[in-house]
View (tube, rainbow, N blue to C red):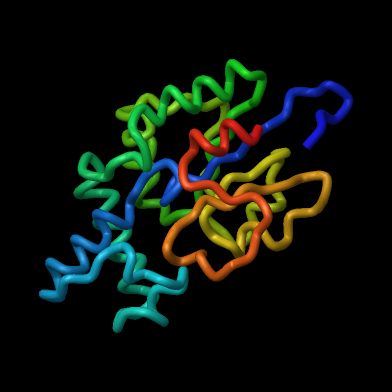
Length: 184
């Protein structure tokens, strides 16, 4: 991961399950609605309807509800997440937060980022099917394998470990954003 002609390098960081541990609140909401007792660890594939009896539309509706009604309950994936993003910036990285989501959640995601003092230079909301690999960055930190597989060199990616990506083989994996910071 060497610098390209000394230009400022951009690190793109996903929101859901990289900055924000949204699945903790999502499974709580699912359990409230269904009278079940699943945990985040039970979500062993990113395609949730292959793990739970729920349609894709219900998955998105539940995510929208959690972000709109329970955003203050969503914890960061680690304490002082904003300090980590600020340190990345001080190390010379342009910090770009990139997230694919429903439009109805945009304001709440922005509030969550502010509430958690997440430093960012750019905030990119993706609404269509354009892959994250098409966006401008040098390094992507994401939890979804599908967002990593088509990244063309010299771009690179770090996989953020989650229960749904444990079976995916990727050379650079981290459990925390602090670990990713050390790799950069």
